[in-house]
Image 1 (spheres, rainbow, N blue to C red):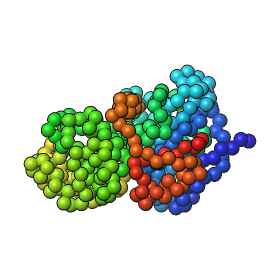
Image 2: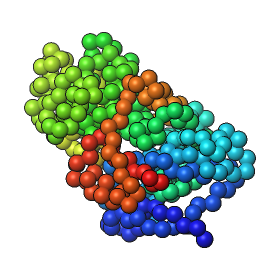
Image 3: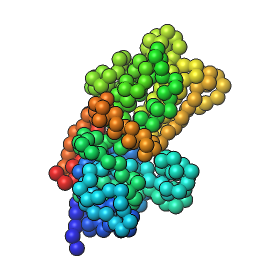
Image 4: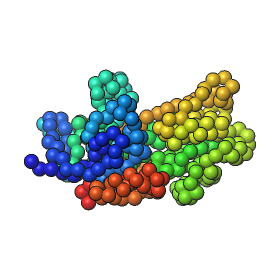
Length: 349
């Protein structure tokens, strides 16, 4: 039996480890990828921090929900891709039959939970392996001449902010203000997307001066340390009106409270980060007619649009690369807050 290397989460509370597992075999309707790049994400940290009673992703779990690769083989009935194609994996897999899936919104599949359908790396075997199985060709997006290493993170760190921002675009015309809380993996991409597709002045908040420097480099026009003083700073910047949209890519209690306090009348508060913060909403608790949203990932069409932004040179992910053997170190650096932008694993060198 042929084997391959993979990064797996194997025991509750343990650190991920590189192991040898059997090569996956492609079945009918499936696609086998030789993985070129796999992204490291805070979501992985989140699920590996869950206690046993809350963990539902199966063990052992091959990590990696951001993936790109070269088609190695296709199963019976697959006609949309062929061996040698460079592709990215659309991660939020759904049933393909419900009303949401019919619109390409498999991130909001109505049947996934009941049918036990889970994304790669978040239940299904993920991309942090030399090879991976993609359950259906509709979950692949052609990369063409895009560099998979530089762009694999767009499958989540690009798609997720793109989806969040696109929904708020009617409120982000000329003369408006958008605030990005957290200038890390998702936030530094969100800043670029805002500059590319909206008319808003972009303000970035973070607790790290280094990440605020990165925010400035990628297009933020104003930066403030993420603390209660930022509310007054944003109010002053906007003539007292507050922000038209606030995108919280952290999602802990202090940041959702900041987002609520700096959102202006008819503004949007979008909580993207999964830090566990909760926002009380009611008359007098938040500015008039503020909409509060908790989006998840994005549609397949939006992933294609995100790659189009990359092709146009409007979005570029700041990355650090690691071999598969170095992957545990990447997670250590992520936990310590030392990753600049996004970490990318190269399972095949």
